[in-house]
Structure formats: structure tokens, C-alpha cells
Length: 40
Image (cartoon, rainbow, N blue to C red; front, top):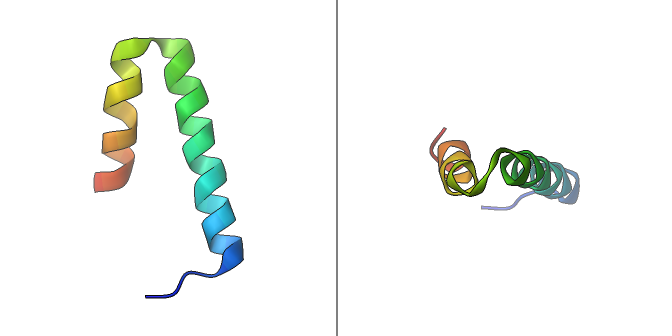
């Protein structure tokens, strides 16, 4: 499966966004939110 560079960078940016918001929310959210993102 090939992913375009634009798509990859978009996903990467979204992941960083999630990570930043989770960090602000706290350690518990940090472990929960990325999992939710991956499963969706």
C-alpha cells in the first residue's frame, strides 16, 4: 500500500496535534487519545 507524501505529512501533523492536546490534558489522556485515533 502506497501513501502519498502529502497524505503522510497530513497524518503526521494530525498525530502531533493530538499529542500536544493530550499532553496538556494530562498523562492519562496521553495514553488514551492516540489509541482512539488509530482504531477509528
